[in-house]
Image (cartoon, rainbow, N blue to C red; front, side):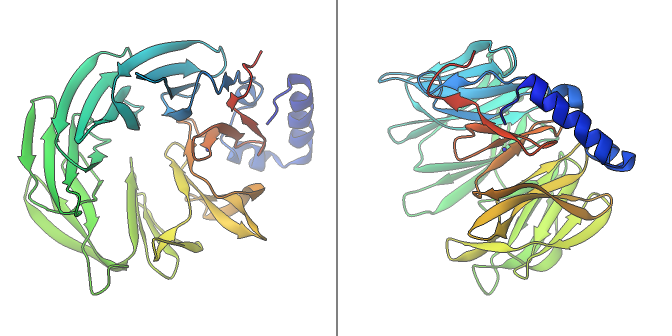
Length: 343
């Protein structure tokens, strides 16, 4: 998503401030105070992987033994942890709504998948079991009590449901498509398969009016965040809507024999889009500012692996198990899951 020795980093920050124009310092949107904090890593005996940000300093991580899988909340800067959830099943996915401080956990047993909704204290707000081979959830960021659930069979046939967990209601979705992206509390977007399974038209659907509308043709990928939607064409053209319309071109990768975006994430607070570009045999992490439409490099000569930004846009979890943290102010990186407990 940096070995922060206080004295060296303070000197670096002061030197950088002296060398850069003042407007560039203000443009980072990242505080020096946060960059000076020292992260206390977890050991591999404690944590298998990190699962995402709860707030600007707190993450979730999972661990397991022969009989149980557990979910913990962890303060990166104090080193304090608390167990939130424990199961005899396997925790396969964890999603976090930072605004409402809610956590959606997906647990699998033999032929059974359970969805569990928790609050930050670990209280169970909702759970629902499905007899399914695979499960896909699209959690509504505008209303965390609503989600779309797609249930797959072993032959990849599927059925999609809309769920209102507050009212314990599960209904067949009026749109039977496996992957959707919420654009409001009652609306979402999705790509219909066109002439090729590698691209198709992008549609929107309003659950209140029950109306479907075509938005764009020839789309290979789409996504949404609070206050932003993005559609991608096979040319590498990214069409952002914030609601200001911004178009920018990024290189794509071949994924499952189809063109797809590089790994990416979006800083909702500062309207910054982070993604990767080829850099020799490796990649560089770059940031594109949707406000001034300028691009800069954050980190060079890096592997292209998943990233997840902290809510304040100051850090990024990085790696397939989010076992490292990148300071987006300095480009420095350090592990958060190590062989030994940090001091």
